[in-house]
Length: 268
Image (cartoon, rainbow, N blue to C red; front, side):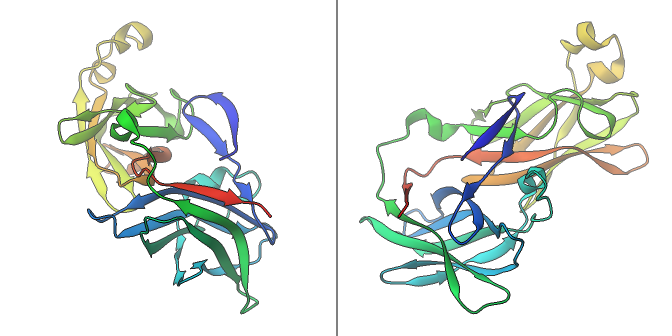
């Protein structure tokens, strides 16, 4: 996907791909939710560059037509230049898996027409060689500076690029405290499917030299056990203050590239 390097390894501005008929889109990955690989799901986002309303999407092959679940919120689109209102442009499409190559067209229907318009054409290829160790990592891209983020919070992750497994679980670990050293009671991670309360007040002794000798800084470490699905999972990290209010620390996405199938684009 084309991206603009902002100089911050944790944050890249999504640019998207220009499709046909003035559509902008991006496809995350292909992934399987069944042990026998009988079903695949294509996920991503798509909207009309001229702001026409997209009401539905589908995949069309030479043997089937499958409608998508459209209208999924995609937080990363909030940073899409001046186009920042298209947060509900995500889609998921379930199709039967095939060992053969499958030619397909991704199509969308606008609100002022009954006609299906082609967004892009491609081919789903069979399983590629094993992805090796890449399958056990979850890459994380977080919006905002790695230190000063939203609502006066300071934040960093111990493993900014890869979240490694610890036994059967995966952990998001780091530290976070408020610049005014107000009390943080809890930290949680919100995804598009669930909310996970993390452990907070863990020791972060390495911060004392950089930020000063404060007990709230020293005990600003956190750990959140997560299990994101393959593909892109939008996340919001929040902190609870002493008045019980939850405030956003940072928003971003986890990317877990596990399924070894590929999409090749067809440009005619």
